[in-house]
Length: 160
Image (tube, rainbow, N blue to C red):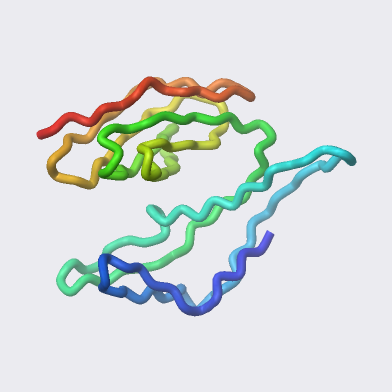
């Protein structure tokens, strides 16, 4: 699978635009994906563009960013779902599912809900509210079982 990113990229913070430059002006990002297809069966292909890993701050004043797209392609075969809801819903925290030395991240939607598609195993969930009014939270030993959806109890972040 090849993702063609084009040449114009930017991150917006409010009305301020920060240009993002692709390394060496490379616009095509390829991923190997082997799928044995059977006739009459529908398959989900997921292209995960991880912005948390792709953009990093190199200088704070004035703000400068490094942009190295981090992309993963996979099928839903052998993956399970982990979902939950974080309150308060208006802060839209970053949530990291950590297994060993690797992690994937997502954010909540406007209802506070999040969803991961993960390989089965044990995960640590780290919730970063990205809002100084609230404390971070960590859930240890979250088990994701093969071909099952794991729904967590409501997660309520504490005020500092």
